[in-house]
Image (cartoon, rainbow, N blue to C red; front, side):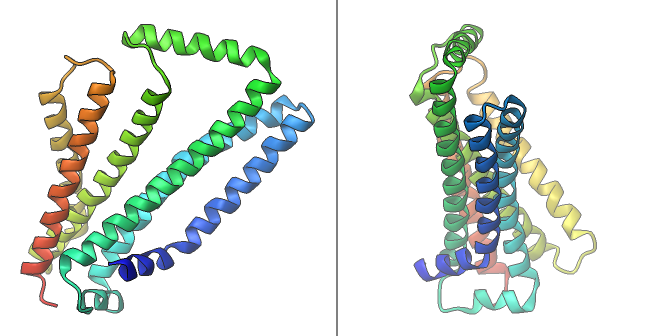
Length: 248
């Protein structure tokens, strides 16, 4: 499986280099704004870092999904499924490589943001007071005292959500490819399946957890467990369909 994962990483390495280059440019702007005390450039760099963070996570997930779709549809990529590995190993390598990339990119931006924020707090003492007031306000609204572990758990929850979305997309693409192989608009049907499955998963979470548990560590942990379960279900579902319905 490690060789398969390396193959996936190599296929998607260029985009990660682009993300690193863009992040480097944003950090150059940030460093300039701090050194020369330029608030306009500072605001621009913080905005760009925020946008780049979200855009990068979305793109990494999107690229993994598009790569999987091409592997099923294009003849040259379809050869991947002819390697002497089980279908579950191939899908597992794709899911793990996608998950690792999402987590790595997410942790990278979290670390950079934490360092930048620490620099700003050290330079502007008033920022620490404002941050503390905002934290207390949010804690009062959600009736829970937020700490560092809560922020990390929430961040981890978001990453698991993204991984779950990727595996749901894999499942949807496989479902449309296997059962609707010769049908028109199978891409549209695949997207509809993707939306419906994510809606149903969200409905299950809201129905079982609901608002009875506020934004506590317990709720976040339960959310994480749900996302892990959804990922496992769609992973095995994808592997089963490819193993039984696709002739390779």
